[in-house]
Length: 212
Image (tube, rainbow, N blue to C red):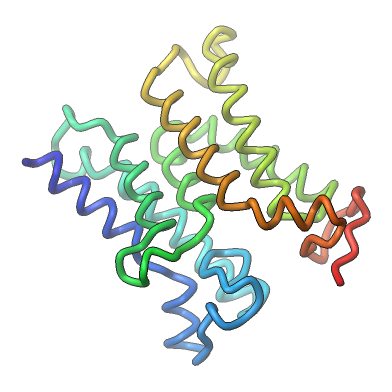
C-alpha cells in the first residue's frame, strides 16, 4: 500500500505541467497553441523566453529528483527510488491534468538521474551541451544522449567509471526512458531528415538545418 501511494504521488508530481502553468498564469499564453504545441522546456524557451524557459527547466528537473528522493523523505528505504522516478517521468509525459499530453521526458528524466546518480547525470549533461553546440538542435542532443545513456550504463560499471557496479533496475529504467524519449521525438526525427528542424541560436549547426 505504501508503494502504491508513493507511485501515485510520484506520477501526480510529474503531471504538473510547469510550462503550461507559467504561460497561462504569467504570460496569458497557452503553449499548446504556439510553436510545437508542446508544454515542455524547449517550447517554453521558444515561445515565452529565457526566464520562463529556465524556470520550467529547473522545476521539471526538480520533479524527477524529488520523486526519486521520496523513499528517503518518507523513511522507506525498501522502496526503489528509480521506480518512483520513472512514474514521475510518465506523469510528465502523459499528465492526467491535461488529457495525457505533456512534455518529451528529457528534463524530468535528467532529474531522476540527478537524484540517483548525480555524477553520471553530470557526464550526460556535458555530452548534451557538446552535441548541442555542434548541431544547434535540442532534439538531436536529446536523442543522441539517450542512446549514449543506454551504451554507457552497460559499459561504465565494467570499467568502474561513474557507476560502481551493474544495477539491473537502472539499466531497465534507462532503456525504458531512452525509448520513451526517442519515441516522443519522432516528429523531430522526420524534420531532421528533411533538414528542417528547429534550431537554437547557439552553436555550429553542422548538419546545416534550414527550417522552412
